[in-house]
Image 1 (tube, helix red, strand yellow):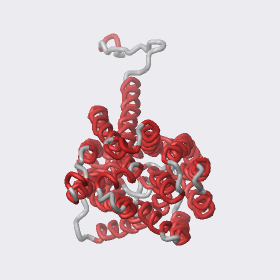
Image 2: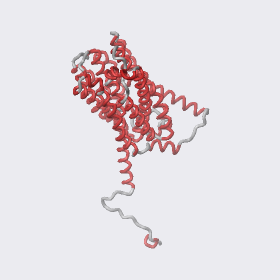
Image 3: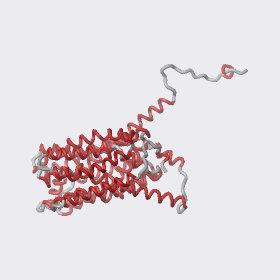
Image 4: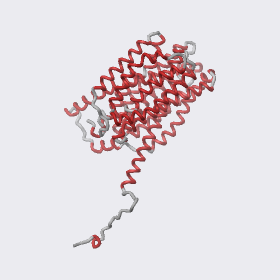
Amino acid sequence: MTTNAELKLPVTVPVPGRAPAAAPAHALKDILRARSMIATGVGNTLEWFDWTIYAVFAPYIAKALFNPADAASALLSTLAIFAVGFVFRPLGGLVFGSLADRIGRKGVLLSTMLLMSAASLLIGLAPTYASLGGWASLVLVIARLVQGFAHGGESTASYAYLAEIAPPARRAVWSSSMFFCVGIGVLMATLFGSLLTRNLDSAAMNSWGWRLPFLVGAVLSLVVLYLRRHMMESDVYQDEHAHQQPTSPGSATDAWSRGKIFRRGLGIFAYQAGTTLPYYIWTSFVAVFAITQRGMEPSGAFTASVGAQLINIVLVPVAGWLSDRLGRKPLTLFYYLATAALTVPLMGSITSDPWSLFMAQATMLAISACIGGTQPAIIAERVPTRYRARVMGTAMPLAVALFGGTAPYLTSWFYSHQLGWVFNAYVIVVCLVSAVVVFSWKETKGIVLSRVE
């Protein structure tokens, strides 16, 4: 009989306390996943900071870049450009979503950050209406269109990427890091508003103070670009492309797949409408609403808003944790129904007292955490990997453009014409329609993304 000694085969003797060779590689992969999540999150924070400071500083932008002789018209024009910026979000989502499905998520996340920071720098350095007349407004329009284009791509790729690199059993809490970081970005924008209005007089704010956050955002983007260069590519995406079987255009299978994906996209559009409309009211615009419609002192309004947003940031990962245990649907349906029930009393409760703003906004942002903790997971779990970024990049930005981008303008217009009840009714109807759509969905908690059909 031949022995190991005769064949001189090496015998591996386990060493106590030493892990198998594969373990360090697995541990390194987990570390890379965590670093990639952080790099994505830091970018989301800066992107939403850049996006939100426009709404926060809208009254000052209106005075600097529009005709100051008609303050009401200047503010409405500024908010109209806020809405126009959303027009390019679907285009950015479509273009970058297609790229993300073809070349990967990482490259898109680098490109969108470059565009976003360039647009912020342009706004920060934009000439005033006094020096360039109507051309100053045109510069602002161009910058916001570029921001909208980049924002659509950034959100699309981030949603898909975070859900794909997360462990299935913890997908909601991992991907909730996106909304946690979104909250940090919005908070930073509001905090800038609070700090600057407290430490600069109105003349300084109108002259150069409002430009500071845009310039700071452009500089910080260099840090984000460095972090994102070292991210991993989504392994779910890589596995899909390694085993993807091409479908013949025009075939019955292709037509069936496209029809099914279209219906999924339509459902996601309806879902997104009910989440984005209240979100933009209660994060980006409610402080401006309190200042312009209720006569609240600016520094008090921004300080109250900062406190309310802190509550949302803390509760988002908690909602993600609950979603990984209870499911996506219960938290989502609670959000829609609570928002529909509380919109009228909470908007009506805001007075010139900053405390009233804090109570109303904190309540709604606590409820909004249910969406922040579930949204990336519930959407990613409804679309197959080969279509995921494209569907997200079309349905979601389109809904955000139509419902979120117009929210500040419509709120301001209806309330300035004593028709606030019309806008409130609109919010309620949209939330109820979204609730009906989500109620019809199957629960998808913890499914394997590569098996989504």
